[in-house]
Amino acid sequence: MRTAHCISVLRRWPQHLDAWAILTLIGLFGLGVQHVAAEPATQGQTIVDADFESAVSEPQWQGELRYGAGFESARALHVESRAGAAGGSPSVRMRLPAETLRGSTLRGSAMVRAEGVSAKPNSWNGIKFMLAIETPDRKLWPQAALDTGTFAWKRAVLSAKIPADATAVILMLGLEQVTGRVWFDNVKLVVAKPPLTAKPAAAPGLAYKGHDLPRLRGAMIGPRIDENGLRTLGRDWNANLIRWQLIRHGRPGQPSSLADYDAWLEGELQRLDAALPWCERYGIYVAVDLHSPPGGKSTVSGYVGSDDRLFTDRAVQDKFVDVWRAITRRYKDARPIWGFDLANEPVEEFVEEGCDDWHGLAERTARAIREIDPQRTIIVEAPPWGSPESLADFTPLAVPNVVYSAHMYVPHRFTHQGVHDRDQPPVMYPGEIDGRVWDKAALRTALQPVADFQRAYNVHIYMGEFSAIRWAPGGSAGRYLRDVIEIFEEHGWDWSYHAFREWSGWSVEHGPDRNDTQPTAEPTDRQLLLREWFGRNDKPAWMAEKRKP
Image (cartoon, helix red, strand yellow):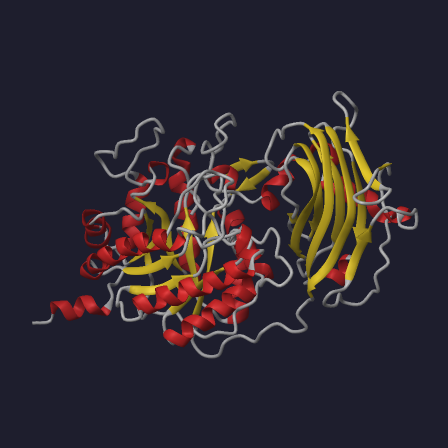
């Protein structure tokens, strides 16, 4: 879900690189040469191992090399940024061999100490233990999550999937848009997962959809929806799908508790139990969305996400599999359930040694589901955040009856304007946004990785979320939604709008005035758009059975 959508640092940071703009940096890094063989990376291969105790590795680094006392050693790399000093983002950098790392997953660790590091002007600023990755059409910045202020030596970690078309991979250590002092020691990058030697073959025959309708079109809904809401959506508007969130809330940045997870989940499943007869009555399929798996932490939006301990604690991963076993047993014979959406917008900031990455965990979970229910649709989103581009570096699970999903909030600056960034000027669609013209052709380009994945593997696609904030200026939200839906329909994708009777910011029953939180007397253009498409829906077969004398 993206109610006040938690946007990935990997995708936002390019707009804010200021003093050390990545394109400029890449042009400067030609002198850094890493001692790695010009063959594809292998499992467990060490790419960087820097303890800074000698000068042997210094020619490989670019930037000012300064030293201080190390972690249980004599020397560590020291970076300092003083208030008022020229160049507010000092760093040292090492260019890595992109050609040998393509398609591999790296695991990084470092010991870091800080002194007097000032507050971050933006969430993506601060202490940088980071990779800067460039491909012909995108840039990624996977980095360790580090606090500011003063702290003693502690371990910082990151994970990064290197795209198959990567042209540059650069390790960066330093400070960005903050003042203070930081020390780095025992910096290590290891190949956690080597590149695939061959991609899976396309599935034979017709792509599995999990239903026999021409299309599923509907909406994500708030978990406290009542029968009246489902009647409106299913009977009056003719939607034939809802995405039901099993969603937990908490204070942003705080990890969720495992101690009361089962009790929380049981309460949410009881809500779903109560709603299933209504869904059956009004001809609505249900995608069960585990929005808040065990082990996640609360996002900036206040809901527990699919991250954190889900990828660093094997016991939490085992719990995740067990949760899906229990859900599957519970709904094995539930007719309205179309599919199980394993985890909402997974994020692998770091995958600890001994833990599965998302692909491995999803496959292990899918196999556990198949032991109980051989047929039920399994829905899988790719990391990070289930974005369209995430499918460019994903491969299908070796499990039958899987549908693949993506969420469309591109460009985020348009779709989420005013959700968190009230001080930024409004932007319109179509139009120029952050220096790029966004129109239907640009949206089609943004969605191309999804279409490519569909074609390459002969799989079905479900666009589980898409939206535009209702106060986008000049009717922009309606124009954006119309173009996005038309592209979905061109490819034959199922879809669910985000969201129906959840938060008023996304509601198509509310007008463009953000201060007016009451539904409008007359249907909005966005509501009419959805209802136009819902009007083309067929209903599940059980509805015809109900009408038989």
